[in-house]
Image 1 (spheres, helix red, strand yellow):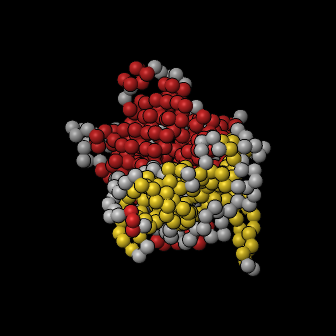
Image 2 (cartoon, one colour):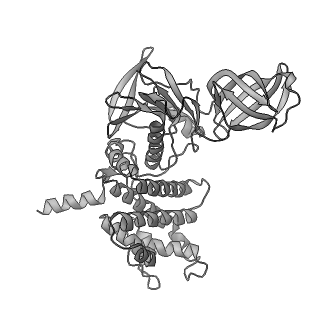
Image 3 (cartoon, rainbow, N blue to C red):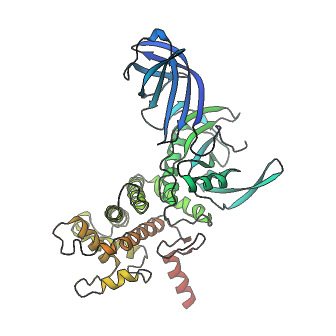
Length: 450
């Protein structure tokens, strides 16, 4: 099966037609068969809509007139978002999905051999392998990444239009399809839709952690061994185009390949899955604060440190059992951070790449002894109105936030047993600039001394 988009995608920010079909629309309990169009509308914010025209016999319509809509035997939960208005041929209505994803074809037991999904607004990847596609007389490089775990293979693939789409998104923002993906078993065996949904959820958190903001697999379509579409999931992308700072470098896609098995091993464990969901959610919310999307850097500092503390509890108390839950609760926040970072071989000194924070730490009236002390004191000055430094160290907010995010990235990478390279957000100046993770640096240094 050739991996290609399952729908016709226009240029960035254009509406995507998902289906043109018959629908049964119940108006005050009476069903009407109508022609309907299902589309993904991207602006001003993404949502999936169903639009059609009801016959004049349906009477005067209000927002609550339509009870439900059924397409291909599936009840599509939703609500009217626009008061119907009359046109020649009937009253037009627009129905919005109540929740996403919504399963539009198949059930949780539906068997399939592969799932094709679509990625919006992902970074331009160099891939770990390449192929060539021909359009007319032109030759286009296509970049691929293969993520493998426990008999699964997830292929991410760029398209002929990817570079132009990313260029347009950088100029005008919004949403555009940048990659497609395929989820399947390496041996070609079948799996059910419930299993596919779980894998797609894990992939949503994995890709979002790499991007530094939400990036979810959308519009998934399941195929059987005869390449027939047997399952469809309707869902919208999250978050307008942006390029936040992140540990992942798009020129080094081996980073994704190397991290995926360890991430999925943790994801399979219920306790770790709950922790990763919370921690990555807070990490992404904080990371967007630097882009001016919703919250400020001060709120980002609070979210980052909440995530580190949650991660510390999961690792120190539940996983390693280095301290009992009661003892952990009694620790100062800085000590919770120290025990986590030290256990993970992550340096706790304030790095030389943040000279303004080092200088502040040495002031006689401050005397922060290390990075955990500095970032937790800055957080305390924000959340405690009686704090003696409140309003006096706002100039340290940005470096403290950036340092906290770096610690959070490194802790997640270490917990997932990653030992490759990463983009150091404190010093990275261009794409492609990476360095070994700190614990690998220490091993290399120890080997050289032997």
